[in-house]
Image (cartoon, rainbow over all chains, first blue to last red; front, side):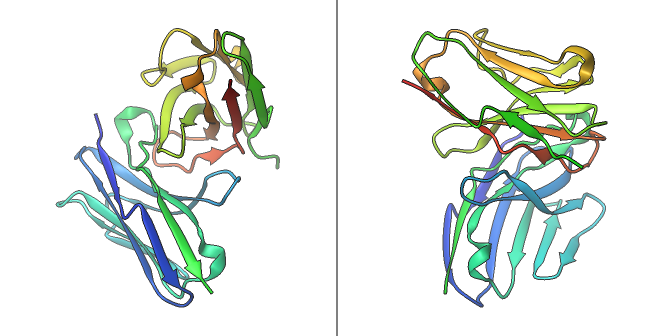
Length: 113
Length: 114
């Protein structure tokens, strides 16, 4: 089955700095690569996703890059703000697995004002 | 439009008791998933319904867990009898199309078995 590794497990940055979280997966059939954000006590929410035919996608301060050859994708947050503090999960999925998400271990991002 | 709702938000039960969690997906979403996060670890898949049918229950820990989705609307997840290791946050998610589509999560049920 799919093996997902996410690094780092914790990340602390100063407000305004950039943050990068990397997710490595094992199943070459994975074709959907979302990132979820979970604030303390709240539900996980999709913040950005990318399909296997695209290498990079941006949405304001957030971007995701995909390297299918190396089987990893990364979340990039620029100009971080305190409200970006949360746990971030990558969750690659495969078409023939019914859409179930295989989550990474999570990265706790702390943005210090 | 209402999002995914879960009941109860918290539940504290004694070992050996039974607990039933409920999930109401977004109306019209055929796909319903159950996930669990134990002790701050990763969120793990439990099972997947397409309408009322179990599509994939490979993540169910053991036969103490029973999920149903009668009529293809809301779903229940029953744990009987509960064990200490069942403690965690149980999330439900729904989606319209299982292929590369956003899954909308409920707020979760925090289950504590004492």
